[in-house]
Length: 59
View 1: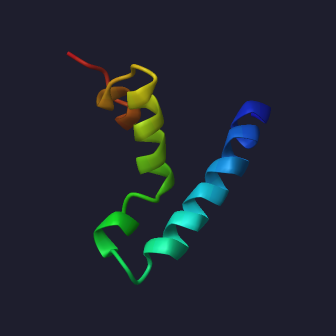
View 2: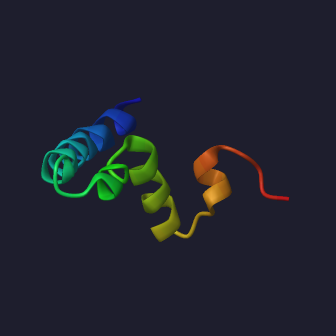
View 3: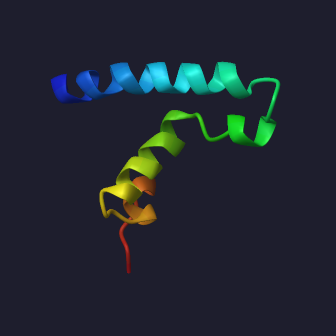
């Protein structure tokens, strides 16, 4: 749980910054700044699949 909290703090800042930047300028880009989307991107860059990001098993 401590690891999650340590990771969540900087992610929360990233999400808040992204939302404030794109709130009026780009509604499509605004949707990218949610916890789920950020975690998908992190998993993808770490070599995980989108299935892992969704919490499902790959066939």
